[in-house]
Length: 183
Ligand code: IMP
Ligand code: MG
Image 1 (cartoon, rainbow, N blue to C red):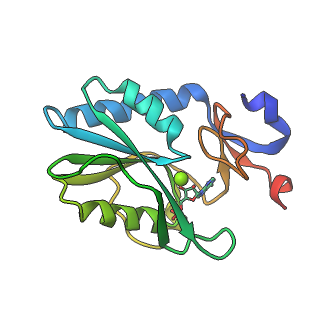
Image 2 (spheres, rainbow, N blue to C red; image 1 turned 30 degrees about the vertical axis):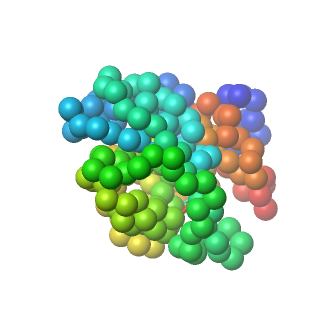
């Protein structure tokens, strides 16, 4: 679906499908350069990172392996607590491999800082993070992120994998959800 299909629900389109593809192409070029001749495993965090993984992986010009994790963070209501449970673990062994975690968005950073430490404990050669979006004003823990698509305001966004109550993941752009949808 595109922004016209849900135009009443969006306050504003932040990034169009074309802008997202262009930015992902730039990130892929950086990753290709940084990881030349290395054994890379990209790890997607389900479900939000599905679109970024699909487009980023195809924009890379080198061989990579792909794996997936699903985690849930416990918290009160909509707030992330940093207490994370693994719902689906990796199939791959990380020993001596270069791991790149691919995320849709970093909000408080609690989930990802837990995940990064967890993967680091498995003996990889390196663990880095690539996220399409980051909300700098929402950060609760410092987290080192190597590749960032866009820094965005501290508003609730949907589309391109990001959901509200499992909707809007299949929206081709990224937009700010209008408050009347969730209030
Ligand atoms: P945190 O960084 O631990 O706070 O949690 C990040 C997770 O919260 C992301 O992976 C998303 O699933 C979800 N999330 C945070 N902000 C948004 C948003 O604006 N729209 C949709 N999901 C979000
Ligand atoms: Mg997510």
